Amino acid sequence: MATQVQQSWKPDSLRAQPGGPAALGIYPGWTNVVVSVVVSMLAVGATSYSFGLFVKPVSTDLGIGRASIAVGLILFHLGSALFSPIVGHIVDRNPARRMMLVSGALAGGGFIIVGLSSSLALMAFCILVPVAAGTVGATATGMVLVSRWFTRLRGRALSISALGTSFGGLITFPIVAVLINNYGWRDALVITGIGIWTVLWLVAFMLREAPAKGGVSMVAAPEQAREWTVTALIRERDFWLIALSIALMLGVDQALLATVTPYAQDRAYSLTAVTLLTTVTTASAIAGKLVIASIADRIDLRLLVGITGLCSTTLCATMLLQPSYGALVAVLSLTGLAIGGTYPLSNAIVAQRFGVVSMGLVRGLMMPLSSIFASICLFSAGKLYDIDKAYDRAFAGFLVATLVAILLIALSGRAKPAAEPA
Image (cartoon, rainbow, N blue to C red; front, side, top):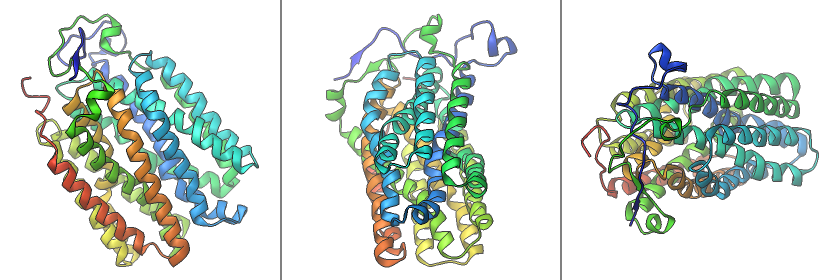
């Protein structure tokens, strides 16, 4: 059973504290949303989105196959799986600014060392430990703070904050592409690391701590005041149904992000044409997140998760048909919702079902499953390509996995929307 705590976060209806954004009539919680957008843009854009850009140049430079190259992203996901429960627990109990400063140094420093090192072992270690731990810490800090500052509009706030993952494809991806084209992949990693370190340290001083720590008096809402333990969570049926469903969808999303670029390059599309594909996907994802933001607090979130899953299956089926460039652009413009919508929905459905007091712990325990499935999908895609010189079997597998995920989320219990009385 979950225990009860004395204080929790239900600040939407509270009058903001004087000073800062409140002096301008802006609810202070939106500052954390802006920070979360920037953090996600860098963390996801520099890893999941940009990984595909490094596949061919690194493979050529180091003389290794694509399955071996995929190990880099697999290590990142394994590191995320390893550190997510630990970092989630730490985020729940430490100042956000401190977490962001440490995370920036770890992630940025890790990128720099990977770019400068000639040792594959050291590269692997940096991806597995500092890069993974730093990105997990930064994104978890932003996500937890947004969840704590919002109750009635939590679905909207989380969806807007998740726009950063799409901006990662719209802004970070093209920047990394230009850096690789002009300076090579090693210098691109160094410059990216410096940028991540600098930006995360700057935004750390914009963060607004949780209302309870900022001196705001509040009355805990019963739905929000549950503090989950590890034992209680692993005994909860819905925890496993939601965790497995989200893990499958996020794993497929990560693999699709990593394979669309080399898939397009294999079809002799130029770097400009490949970048356009990512831009189109990102624009679609942004539009999808805005739609989710407008309805997430008024609809069964399981339905929205199922819709994003159907978009993903449509994309996989299209890739199997070897479409023309124009058709590929058209489909990506419609199915970007799948890649863009899963992450904010996963945070929203967790907050809705389990509350926010233990948000870091719950998401942290779910992340290992997401990382494991992402690693399996990534390695399988690379291995099957090395065998078949095509991604057809991988796309077929992704399609089946997504259908299973839709079934699992449908079997989970329906939580009452936050806008309804507790």
